[in-house]
Amino acid sequence: MTIKDIARLCGVSISTVSRVLNDRPDVSEENRRKVLAVIESSNYIPNNSARDLVKTKSDSIGVVVRGVSNPFYTDIIRAVGETINARGCTMVMQQIGGQDDEIKHGAMMEREKRLQGLIFLGGRSDYTPQEVASLNVPFVCCSYSNQYGSLDRDTFSSVSIADEEEAYHAVKTLYKQGHRRIAALISQKDDRSISQLRYEGYRRAMAELSLPREESLIISAGAFDIRSAYLATAEKLKEDPDFTALFAISDNMAIGAMRALHEAGRRVPEDCSVLAIDGLEVSEYIQPQLSTFCQPKAEMGRRSVEILLDVLEGGGTHRHELLPTTFRAGKSVQKLP
Image 1 (cartoon, rainbow, N blue to C red):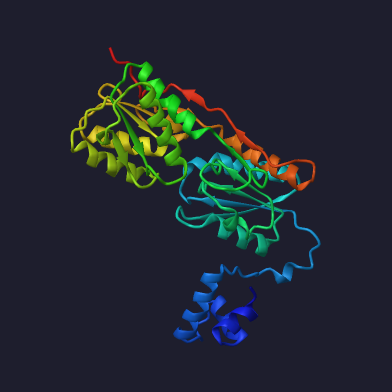
Image 2: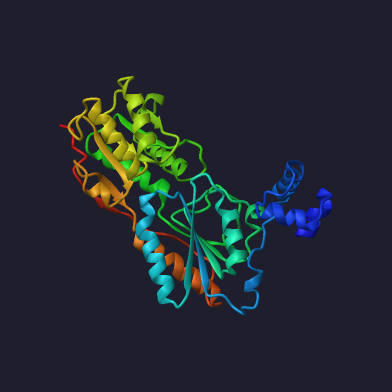
């Protein structure tokens, strides 16, 4: 699909399409709507880098960060940048909102910056071949994989932890401390991404341990941020649910939950233990220090770049690596008598 094709389908001039693409005001609303509708339906991605076509080769690696305010990505981004620079390449990074389409943004970056490859930092886990067809360079999913999708595993790489398995171990850790009424703080049960994976790990552990799996033990925040977790937990606590421990699928969410517990008069860990996954630096300094399974963030970033460059240099194949977490005992889990 070219600008000429769009103009033909809309019955307008090429210059009109160009003005719409550049958000110029001198276009009628009717023509603007027609052009935008065709662009949307055809998944047209403008190529704004024609001036760069004289280059014979780009040394740029694109990094798309999904979730502009997520502190989990800080150490990963630093490691990615350092590794890219050490290998003589240039990092081009774009941050997008948590609900934005990382594949579409990556495809636009690829064309505009003439990228060699892409690293997606955070994203969905259910890509289809049709969705990634707009990408013409190798890519790595960093901190997640494609467990719910239908991509051929030989066509992309991933570096992550075993999310379902780590959640399973978190619940068993609480069980070993004597807890039987264990609540789960998640984003959504069916987001086809990390929340669903960790929720499935929670469910598997509860089933194997013959523990109750009641709706009253599930807190769905709808998002991963601290405020959403705080509000959802505070609302749940109004029902006076009967649990002695809370498994939060992320440190951010655990921090929000701990405030809600405090405001409801429930002490951590005396009245309710809290355990999470991530290992954010800030969670090490809250009171009480959060008990959590720390992801190897810097190693994730390094390995993502190394795998991508190995593929680009012709000597490597796509790989899928699962890295181990490290348990930080913290002070937010207490053994029941």
